[in-house]
Image (cartoon, one colour):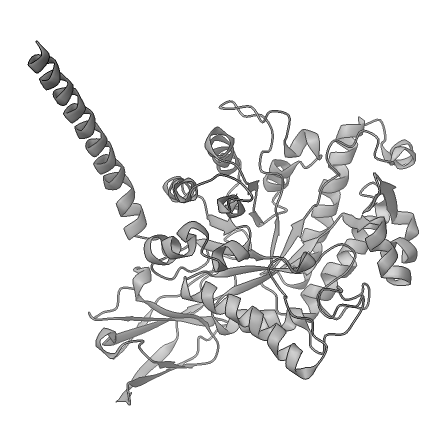
Length: 502
Protein backbone atom coordinates (compact mmCIF):
# COMPACT_ATOMS: atom_id res chain seq x y z
CA UNK A 1 0.00 0.00 0.00
CA UNK A 2 2.87 2.33 0.86
CA UNK A 3 4.54 1.67 -2.51
CA UNK A 4 1.25 2.34 -4.32
CA UNK A 5 0.78 5.60 -2.43
CA UNK A 6 4.28 6.75 -3.30
CA UNK A 7 3.72 5.93 -6.99
CA UNK A 8 0.41 7.79 -6.89
CA UNK A 9 2.07 10.84 -5.35
CA UNK A 10 4.81 10.72 -7.98
CA UNK A 11 2.21 10.49 -10.75
CA UNK A 12 0.32 13.47 -9.32
CA UNK A 13 3.51 15.51 -9.06
CA UNK A 14 4.49 14.58 -12.64
CA UNK A 15 1.04 15.63 -13.85
CA UNK A 16 1.37 18.96 -12.02
CA UNK A 17 4.80 19.49 -13.55
CA UNK A 18 3.44 18.66 -17.00
CA UNK A 19 0.56 21.13 -16.54
CA UNK A 20 3.03 23.84 -15.56
CA UNK A 21 5.21 23.07 -18.58
CA UNK A 22 2.20 23.14 -20.92
CA UNK A 23 1.06 26.46 -19.42
CA UNK A 24 4.51 27.95 -19.88
CA UNK A 25 4.73 26.71 -23.47
CA UNK A 26 1.29 28.12 -24.28
CA UNK A 27 2.29 31.45 -22.73
CA UNK A 28 5.45 31.50 -24.82
CA UNK A 29 3.58 30.46 -27.97
CA UNK A 30 1.14 33.33 -27.54
CA UNK A 31 3.58 36.03 -26.52
CA UNK A 32 6.74 35.30 -28.48
CA UNK A 33 5.28 36.40 -31.84
CA UNK A 34 4.30 39.72 -30.28
CA UNK A 35 7.78 40.21 -28.90
CA UNK A 36 9.53 38.98 -32.05
CA UNK A 37 7.58 41.19 -34.41
CA UNK A 38 7.39 44.74 -33.08
CA UNK A 39 5.02 46.99 -35.02
CA UNK A 40 6.33 49.51 -37.52
CA UNK A 41 4.26 52.30 -35.92
CA UNK A 42 4.27 52.66 -32.15
CA UNK A 43 4.72 55.40 -29.56
CA UNK A 44 7.61 54.59 -27.22
CA UNK A 45 7.83 57.44 -24.77
CA UNK A 46 9.58 58.31 -21.53
CA UNK A 47 8.98 61.16 -19.10
CA UNK A 48 12.12 63.11 -18.13
CA UNK A 49 11.26 64.74 -14.81
CA UNK A 50 13.03 67.96 -13.85
CA UNK A 51 11.18 68.81 -10.63
CA UNK A 52 13.62 68.36 -7.71
CA UNK A 53 16.07 67.00 -10.31
CA UNK A 54 14.42 63.59 -10.00
CA UNK A 55 15.62 62.48 -13.44
CA UNK A 56 17.61 65.49 -14.62
CA UNK A 57 19.62 67.62 -13.94
CA UNK A 58 21.96 66.46 -11.20
CA UNK A 59 24.51 69.23 -11.80
CA UNK A 60 23.84 72.97 -11.36
CA UNK A 61 24.87 75.13 -14.32
CA UNK A 62 27.03 77.82 -12.74
CA UNK A 63 30.17 77.74 -14.92
CA UNK A 64 31.15 76.71 -18.46
CA UNK A 65 32.32 73.34 -17.13
CA UNK A 66 29.14 72.67 -15.11
CA UNK A 67 26.99 73.76 -18.08
CA UNK A 68 28.71 71.13 -20.23
CA UNK A 69 28.25 68.55 -17.48
CA UNK A 70 24.54 69.35 -17.12
CA UNK A 71 24.09 69.00 -20.87
CA UNK A 72 26.13 65.78 -20.91
CA UNK A 73 23.75 64.27 -18.33
CA UNK A 74 20.83 64.84 -20.68
CA UNK A 75 22.78 63.57 -23.69
CA UNK A 76 23.54 60.33 -21.85
CA UNK A 77 19.82 59.81 -21.16
CA UNK A 78 18.91 60.49 -24.80
CA UNK A 79 21.67 58.24 -26.12
CA UNK A 80 20.40 55.34 -24.06
CA UNK A 81 16.79 55.96 -25.08
CA UNK A 82 17.87 56.01 -28.71
CA UNK A 83 19.86 52.78 -28.26
CA UNK A 84 16.69 51.08 -26.99
CA UNK A 85 14.66 52.42 -29.97
CA UNK A 86 12.55 54.94 -28.06
CA UNK A 87 11.04 57.62 -30.31
CA UNK A 88 9.34 60.14 -27.98
CA UNK A 89 10.68 62.22 -25.10
CA UNK A 90 8.28 64.01 -22.75
CA UNK A 91 10.63 66.72 -21.50
CA UNK A 92 9.50 68.64 -18.41
CA UNK A 93 9.26 72.25 -19.53
CA UNK A 94 7.05 73.86 -16.86
CA UNK A 95 6.87 72.67 -13.28
CA UNK A 96 4.95 74.80 -10.76
CA UNK A 97 4.94 78.39 -11.87
CA UNK A 98 8.49 78.13 -13.22
CA UNK A 99 9.98 76.89 -16.47
CA UNK A 100 13.00 75.31 -18.18
CA UNK A 101 13.22 77.69 -21.13
CA UNK A 102 13.89 81.40 -21.56
CA UNK A 103 10.44 82.84 -20.88
CA UNK A 104 9.13 86.37 -20.74
CA UNK A 105 6.31 85.18 -18.44
CA UNK A 106 7.74 82.88 -15.73
CA UNK A 107 11.19 82.47 -14.18
CA UNK A 108 13.71 79.71 -14.70
CA UNK A 109 13.35 76.76 -12.33
CA UNK A 110 15.97 76.86 -9.57
CA UNK A 111 16.96 73.25 -10.29
CA UNK A 112 19.03 74.51 -13.25
CA UNK A 113 21.37 76.80 -11.34
CA UNK A 114 20.42 76.56 -7.67
CA UNK A 115 18.80 80.01 -7.88
CA UNK A 116 15.22 80.99 -8.82
CA UNK A 117 15.31 82.72 -12.19
CA UNK A 118 19.00 81.91 -12.61
CA UNK A 119 20.05 81.81 -16.27
CA UNK A 120 21.81 78.48 -16.94
CA UNK A 121 23.80 79.95 -19.83
CA UNK A 122 21.84 78.05 -22.47
CA UNK A 123 18.21 77.27 -23.24
CA UNK A 124 17.44 73.76 -21.89
CA UNK A 125 14.31 73.29 -23.99
CA UNK A 126 16.04 74.33 -27.23
CA UNK A 127 18.93 72.03 -26.35
CA UNK A 128 16.64 69.07 -25.57
CA UNK A 129 14.72 69.52 -28.84
CA UNK A 130 17.89 69.70 -30.94
CA UNK A 131 19.42 66.64 -29.28
CA UNK A 132 16.20 64.62 -29.62
CA UNK A 133 15.93 65.51 -33.30
CA UNK A 134 19.57 64.53 -33.92
CA UNK A 135 18.60 61.07 -32.70
CA UNK A 136 15.39 60.85 -34.72
CA UNK A 137 13.19 61.23 -31.64
CA UNK A 138 10.27 63.59 -31.04
CA UNK A 139 10.44 66.07 -28.17
CA UNK A 140 7.20 67.09 -26.44
CA UNK A 141 7.11 70.00 -24.01
CA UNK A 142 5.64 68.54 -20.80
CA UNK A 143 3.88 71.35 -18.92
CA UNK A 144 2.33 71.16 -15.46
CA UNK A 145 -0.73 73.43 -15.65
CA UNK A 146 -3.00 74.08 -12.63
CA UNK A 147 -0.85 73.55 -9.44
CA UNK A 148 1.53 76.37 -8.49
CA UNK A 149 3.27 74.82 -5.49
CA UNK A 150 3.16 75.20 -1.73
CA UNK A 151 3.59 78.46 0.18
CA UNK A 152 7.34 78.01 0.56
CA UNK A 153 7.79 77.48 -3.19
CA UNK A 154 5.58 80.43 -4.10
CA UNK A 155 7.43 82.64 -1.62
CA UNK A 156 10.76 81.58 -3.17
CA UNK A 157 9.56 82.78 -6.60
CA UNK A 158 8.97 86.23 -5.08
CA UNK A 159 7.67 88.97 -7.37
CA UNK A 160 8.11 86.69 -10.39
CA UNK A 161 5.40 84.33 -9.16
CA UNK A 162 2.13 84.28 -11.06
CA UNK A 163 0.47 84.57 -7.64
CA UNK A 164 1.96 88.09 -7.46
CA UNK A 165 1.64 89.07 -11.12
CA UNK A 166 -1.83 87.64 -11.76
CA UNK A 167 -3.39 87.41 -8.32
CA UNK A 168 -6.96 87.31 -9.69
CA UNK A 169 -6.53 83.91 -11.35
CA UNK A 170 -4.77 82.22 -8.40
CA UNK A 171 -6.35 80.65 -5.33
CA UNK A 172 -4.92 79.14 -2.13
CA UNK A 173 -6.18 75.71 -1.11
CA UNK A 174 -4.83 73.37 1.59
CA UNK A 175 -1.51 75.23 1.94
CA UNK A 176 -0.92 75.23 -1.79
CA UNK A 177 -1.69 77.62 -4.63
CA UNK A 178 -3.52 76.80 -7.84
CA UNK A 179 -4.61 78.52 -10.99
CA UNK A 180 -8.39 78.83 -10.85
CA UNK A 181 -9.93 76.88 -13.76
CA UNK A 182 -13.21 78.74 -13.19
CA UNK A 183 -11.71 82.16 -13.94
CA UNK A 184 -12.07 83.08 -17.64
CA UNK A 185 -8.53 84.52 -17.78
CA UNK A 186 -6.86 81.28 -16.68
CA UNK A 187 -7.08 79.77 -20.15
CA UNK A 188 -5.56 82.98 -21.58
CA UNK A 189 -2.63 82.76 -19.15
CA UNK A 190 -1.92 79.10 -19.92
CA UNK A 191 -2.23 79.80 -23.64
CA UNK A 192 0.36 82.58 -23.35
CA UNK A 193 2.85 80.03 -21.99
CA UNK A 194 1.94 77.48 -24.68
CA UNK A 195 2.25 80.17 -27.35
CA UNK A 196 5.81 80.96 -26.23
CA UNK A 197 6.77 77.31 -26.54
CA UNK A 198 5.01 76.50 -29.83
CA UNK A 199 5.94 79.69 -31.68
CA UNK A 200 9.58 79.90 -30.57
CA UNK A 201 10.59 76.25 -30.47
CA UNK A 202 10.50 73.36 -32.92
CA UNK A 203 8.57 71.14 -30.52
CA UNK A 204 6.72 68.10 -31.79
CA UNK A 205 4.07 68.23 -29.10
CA UNK A 206 2.78 69.97 -25.97
CA UNK A 207 1.87 67.62 -23.15
CA UNK A 208 -0.28 68.80 -20.23
CA UNK A 209 -0.07 67.45 -16.71
CA UNK A 210 -2.26 68.21 -13.69
CA UNK A 211 -4.88 69.72 -15.96
CA UNK A 212 -7.41 69.00 -13.26
CA UNK A 213 -8.85 70.16 -9.99
CA UNK A 214 -7.16 69.05 -6.76
CA UNK A 215 -8.22 65.62 -5.54
CA UNK A 216 -11.51 65.52 -3.62
CA UNK A 217 -11.90 69.28 -3.54
CA UNK A 218 -15.47 70.00 -2.38
CA UNK A 219 -14.19 73.12 -0.61
CA UNK A 220 -12.01 74.42 -3.43
CA UNK A 221 -12.50 78.22 -3.15
CA UNK A 222 -14.36 78.89 -6.38
CA UNK A 223 -17.82 79.69 -4.97
CA UNK A 224 -17.72 83.32 -6.20
CA UNK A 225 -16.87 82.26 -9.75
CA UNK A 226 -19.48 79.49 -9.61
CA UNK A 227 -22.23 81.95 -8.71
CA UNK A 228 -21.04 84.34 -11.40
CA UNK A 229 -20.48 81.94 -14.31
CA UNK A 230 -22.31 78.64 -13.70
CA UNK A 231 -25.59 79.59 -15.45
CA UNK A 232 -27.63 76.95 -13.64
CA UNK A 233 -25.17 74.08 -14.05
CA UNK A 234 -24.27 71.83 -11.13
CA UNK A 235 -20.94 72.54 -9.47
CA UNK A 236 -19.47 69.29 -10.82
CA UNK A 237 -20.61 69.95 -14.39
CA UNK A 238 -19.41 73.55 -14.27
CA UNK A 239 -15.97 72.43 -13.13
CA UNK A 240 -15.76 69.82 -15.87
CA UNK A 241 -16.83 72.42 -18.42
CA UNK A 242 -14.13 74.80 -17.15
CA UNK A 243 -11.38 72.25 -17.81
CA UNK A 244 -12.90 71.32 -21.17
CA UNK A 245 -12.93 74.97 -22.22
CA UNK A 246 -9.23 75.32 -21.32
CA UNK A 247 -8.41 72.18 -23.34
CA UNK A 248 -10.52 73.38 -26.30
CA UNK A 249 -9.03 76.87 -26.27
CA UNK A 250 -5.43 75.66 -26.16
CA UNK A 251 -5.97 72.91 -28.72
CA UNK A 252 -7.45 75.32 -31.25
CA UNK A 253 -4.73 77.85 -30.50
CA UNK A 254 -1.94 75.35 -31.12
CA UNK A 255 -3.50 74.07 -34.34
CA UNK A 256 -3.84 77.65 -35.62
CA UNK A 257 -0.07 78.09 -35.15
CA UNK A 258 1.34 74.69 -36.16
CA UNK A 259 -1.26 72.00 -37.00
CA UNK A 260 1.31 69.18 -36.78
CA UNK A 261 2.21 69.85 -33.14
CA UNK A 262 0.60 67.09 -31.07
CA UNK A 263 -1.57 68.17 -28.14
CA UNK A 264 -1.90 65.65 -25.33
CA UNK A 265 -2.73 65.28 -21.65
CA UNK A 266 -1.87 62.70 -19.00
CA UNK A 267 -5.17 62.35 -17.09
CA UNK A 268 -5.98 60.24 -14.05
CA UNK A 269 -5.73 56.65 -15.26
CA UNK A 270 -9.36 55.60 -14.75
CA UNK A 271 -11.99 57.68 -16.56
CA UNK A 272 -14.85 56.39 -14.39
CA UNK A 273 -16.47 53.08 -13.51
CA UNK A 274 -16.62 50.68 -16.44
CA UNK A 275 -19.03 47.83 -17.13
CA UNK A 276 -16.09 45.49 -16.49
CA UNK A 277 -14.72 46.90 -13.22
CA UNK A 278 -15.35 49.76 -10.80
CA UNK A 279 -12.87 52.60 -10.30
CA UNK A 280 -13.27 52.32 -6.52
CA UNK A 281 -13.96 56.01 -6.05
CA UNK A 282 -10.83 57.28 -7.80
CA UNK A 283 -11.37 58.46 -11.35
CA UNK A 284 -10.89 61.40 -13.69
CA UNK A 285 -14.55 62.28 -14.24
CA UNK A 286 -15.86 62.47 -10.68
CA UNK A 287 -12.78 63.00 -8.53
CA UNK A 288 -10.86 65.69 -10.43
CA UNK A 289 -13.50 66.79 -13.01
CA UNK A 290 -11.66 65.71 -16.17
CA UNK A 291 -14.13 64.78 -18.92
CA UNK A 292 -11.32 63.27 -20.97
CA UNK A 293 -13.45 60.98 -23.11
CA UNK A 294 -15.54 64.05 -23.89
CA UNK A 295 -12.33 65.75 -25.11
CA UNK A 296 -11.58 62.74 -27.31
CA UNK A 297 -15.12 62.71 -28.68
CA UNK A 298 -14.93 66.41 -29.52
CA UNK A 299 -11.55 65.91 -31.17
CA UNK A 300 -9.64 68.40 -29.01
CA UNK A 301 -6.81 66.02 -28.14
CA UNK A 302 -4.41 64.19 -30.46
CA UNK A 303 -3.08 61.83 -27.81
CA UNK A 304 -3.98 60.77 -24.30
CA UNK A 305 -1.45 59.33 -21.85
CA UNK A 306 -3.69 57.99 -19.05
CA UNK A 307 -1.65 57.44 -15.89
CA UNK A 308 -2.41 53.75 -15.58
CA UNK A 309 -0.01 53.17 -12.71
CA UNK A 310 -1.92 50.08 -11.61
CA UNK A 311 -1.94 46.36 -12.20
CA UNK A 312 -4.47 43.54 -12.62
CA UNK A 313 -8.08 44.61 -12.84
CA UNK A 314 -7.10 48.17 -12.09
CA UNK A 315 -5.17 48.31 -15.39
CA UNK A 316 -6.64 46.09 -18.12
CA UNK A 317 -10.37 47.03 -18.06
CA UNK A 318 -9.53 50.73 -17.98
CA UNK A 319 -6.96 50.51 -20.77
CA UNK A 320 -9.63 48.82 -22.91
CA UNK A 321 -12.16 51.50 -21.98
CA UNK A 322 -9.83 54.27 -23.14
CA UNK A 323 -9.23 52.49 -26.44
CA UNK A 324 -12.93 51.84 -27.07
CA UNK A 325 -13.77 55.52 -26.46
CA UNK A 326 -10.76 56.96 -28.29
CA UNK A 327 -12.60 58.39 -31.33
CA UNK A 328 -9.61 57.33 -33.40
CA UNK A 329 -7.15 59.35 -31.33
CA UNK A 330 -3.99 57.82 -29.93
CA UNK A 331 -4.17 56.16 -26.49
CA UNK A 332 -0.75 55.70 -24.91
CA UNK A 333 -1.01 54.22 -21.40
CA UNK A 334 1.46 55.57 -18.89
CA UNK A 335 3.14 52.61 -17.16
CA UNK A 336 4.13 52.92 -13.51
CA UNK A 337 7.62 51.47 -13.91
CA UNK A 338 8.68 53.19 -10.67
CA UNK A 339 6.81 50.43 -8.84
CA UNK A 340 9.60 48.08 -9.93
CA UNK A 341 11.80 49.78 -7.35
CA UNK A 342 11.46 47.85 -4.07
CA UNK A 343 11.20 51.13 -2.17
CA UNK A 344 8.17 52.15 -4.28
CA UNK A 345 6.25 48.88 -4.59
CA UNK A 346 6.51 45.14 -4.85
CA UNK A 347 6.00 44.80 -8.61
CA UNK A 348 8.04 42.37 -10.65
CA UNK A 349 9.15 42.83 -14.24
CA UNK A 350 6.50 40.48 -15.59
CA UNK A 351 3.80 42.98 -14.51
CA UNK A 352 5.13 45.56 -16.97
CA UNK A 353 5.78 42.93 -19.65
CA UNK A 354 2.18 41.68 -19.47
CA UNK A 355 0.89 45.23 -19.78
CA UNK A 356 3.01 45.87 -22.86
CA UNK A 357 1.88 42.62 -24.48
CA UNK A 358 -1.71 43.65 -23.75
CA UNK A 359 -1.21 47.11 -25.29
CA UNK A 360 0.07 45.59 -28.53
CA UNK A 361 -2.49 42.81 -28.66
CA UNK A 362 -5.37 45.32 -28.37
CA UNK A 363 -4.05 47.88 -30.83
CA UNK A 364 -3.30 50.79 -28.51
CA UNK A 365 -0.86 53.35 -29.91
CA UNK A 366 2.05 52.51 -27.58
CA UNK A 367 3.15 53.22 -24.04
CA UNK A 368 5.02 55.78 -21.95
CA UNK A 369 7.33 54.97 -19.07
CA UNK A 370 7.21 56.90 -15.81
CA UNK A 371 10.02 57.78 -15.06
CA UNK A 372 13.18 57.68 -17.14
CA UNK A 373 15.34 57.12 -14.04
CA UNK A 374 14.08 53.55 -13.76
CA UNK A 375 15.01 52.94 -17.39
CA UNK A 376 18.49 54.36 -16.84
CA UNK A 377 18.92 52.26 -13.70
CA UNK A 378 17.71 49.15 -15.57
CA UNK A 379 15.45 48.45 -12.59
CA UNK A 380 14.72 44.71 -12.44
CA UNK A 381 16.20 44.42 -15.94
CA UNK A 382 13.49 46.55 -17.60
CA UNK A 383 15.83 48.39 -19.97
CA UNK A 384 17.37 45.09 -21.06
CA UNK A 385 13.92 43.60 -21.66
CA UNK A 386 12.93 46.54 -23.85
CA UNK A 387 16.15 46.50 -25.83
CA UNK A 388 16.28 42.72 -26.29
CA UNK A 389 12.61 41.69 -26.45
CA UNK A 390 10.14 44.51 -27.06
CA UNK A 391 11.89 47.36 -28.89
CA UNK A 392 14.16 45.22 -31.02
CA UNK A 393 13.59 47.37 -34.11
CA UNK A 394 12.94 51.10 -34.58
CA UNK A 395 9.35 52.33 -34.87
CA UNK A 396 7.82 55.30 -36.66
CA UNK A 397 5.22 57.43 -34.93
CA UNK A 398 1.57 56.65 -35.75
CA UNK A 399 0.00 59.10 -38.20
CA UNK A 400 -2.60 61.76 -37.39
CA UNK A 401 -5.10 61.44 -40.27
CA UNK A 402 -7.57 63.79 -38.54
CA UNK A 403 -5.03 66.60 -39.10
CA UNK A 404 -3.59 65.57 -42.48
CA UNK A 405 -3.90 62.30 -44.39
CA UNK A 406 -2.02 63.20 -47.59
CA UNK A 407 1.40 61.63 -47.98
CA UNK A 408 4.26 63.71 -49.35
CA UNK A 409 5.49 63.10 -52.87
CA UNK A 410 8.28 60.51 -52.86
CA UNK A 411 11.92 61.55 -53.23
CA UNK A 412 13.69 60.65 -56.48
CA UNK A 413 17.09 59.81 -57.90
CA UNK A 414 18.50 57.81 -55.00
CA UNK A 415 22.20 57.17 -55.52
CA UNK A 416 24.52 55.13 -53.33
CA UNK A 417 28.27 55.62 -53.43
CA UNK A 418 30.30 52.48 -52.93
CA UNK A 419 31.69 52.22 -49.45
CA UNK A 420 34.96 53.80 -48.50
CA UNK A 421 36.37 52.79 -45.16
CA UNK A 422 33.06 51.11 -44.40
CA UNK A 423 30.95 54.25 -45.08
CA UNK A 424 28.10 54.39 -47.60
CA UNK A 425 26.98 57.80 -48.80
CA UNK A 426 23.33 58.07 -49.89
CA UNK A 427 21.86 61.09 -51.69
CA UNK A 428 18.53 61.81 -53.35
CA UNK A 429 16.38 64.53 -54.86
CA UNK A 430 13.87 66.05 -52.42
CA UNK A 431 10.14 65.50 -52.29
CA UNK A 432 8.36 68.25 -54.20
CA UNK A 433 5.92 69.25 -51.50
CA UNK A 434 4.42 72.70 -51.35
CA UNK A 435 4.00 73.02 -47.56
CA UNK A 436 7.24 74.79 -46.60
CA UNK A 437 6.20 75.07 -42.94
CA UNK A 438 5.84 71.31 -42.71
CA UNK A 439 8.62 70.31 -45.08
CA UNK A 440 9.02 66.54 -45.37
CA UNK A 441 11.79 64.66 -43.65
CA UNK A 442 13.10 61.28 -44.74
CA UNK A 443 13.24 57.68 -43.57
CA UNK A 444 16.19 55.57 -44.72
CA UNK A 445 15.82 51.81 -45.08
CA UNK A 446 18.37 49.08 -45.78
CA UNK A 447 18.35 45.31 -46.25
CA UNK A 448 20.17 42.36 -47.71
CA UNK A 449 17.50 41.77 -50.31
CA UNK A 450 16.20 43.83 -53.24
CA UNK A 451 13.83 45.60 -53.32
CA UNK A 452 14.02 46.79 -49.74
CA UNK A 453 10.89 45.88 -47.78
CA UNK A 454 9.85 49.19 -46.21
CA UNK A 455 7.02 47.56 -44.28
CA UNK A 456 9.55 45.75 -42.09
CA UNK A 457 10.69 47.99 -39.19
CA UNK A 458 13.91 46.00 -38.89
CA UNK A 459 14.97 47.67 -42.13
CA UNK A 460 14.72 51.22 -40.72
CA UNK A 461 18.22 52.70 -40.53
CA UNK A 462 17.31 56.31 -39.75
CA UNK A 463 14.23 58.54 -39.40
CA UNK A 464 13.59 62.29 -39.24
CA UNK A 465 16.52 62.82 -41.65
CA UNK A 466 16.61 66.45 -42.72
CA UNK A 467 18.31 67.29 -45.97
CA UNK A 468 18.90 64.93 -48.86
CA UNK A 469 22.03 63.07 -47.79
CA UNK A 470 22.75 60.30 -45.32
CA UNK A 471 25.95 58.51 -44.41
CA UNK A 472 25.44 54.89 -43.44
CA UNK A 473 27.96 53.52 -40.98
CA UNK A 474 27.15 49.95 -39.91
CA UNK A 475 27.92 49.14 -36.30
CA UNK A 476 29.65 45.94 -37.39
CA UNK A 477 31.01 45.46 -40.93
CA UNK A 478 29.57 41.94 -41.20
CA UNK A 479 26.04 43.26 -40.53
CA UNK A 480 26.19 45.89 -43.27
CA UNK A 481 23.11 46.22 -45.48
CA UNK A 482 23.52 45.86 -49.26
CA UNK A 483 20.50 47.69 -50.66
CA UNK A 484 18.80 50.94 -49.69
CA UNK A 485 15.50 52.81 -50.04
CA UNK A 486 14.23 56.23 -48.92
CA UNK A 487 10.75 57.60 -48.21
CA UNK A 488 9.51 61.10 -47.42
CA UNK A 489 7.48 61.58 -44.25
CA UNK A 490 5.68 64.64 -42.90
CA UNK A 491 5.22 65.62 -39.26
CA UNK A 492 1.73 64.20 -39.21
CA UNK A 493 3.24 60.76 -39.87
CA UNK A 494 2.18 60.41 -43.52
CA UNK A 495 4.80 58.44 -45.43
CA UNK A 496 5.37 58.44 -49.20
CA UNK A 497 6.12 55.52 -51.45
CA UNK A 498 9.75 54.47 -51.45
CA UNK A 499 12.44 55.28 -53.95
CA UNK A 500 14.64 52.22 -54.32
CA UNK A 501 18.32 52.14 -55.02
CA UNK A 502 18.95 51.78 -58.77
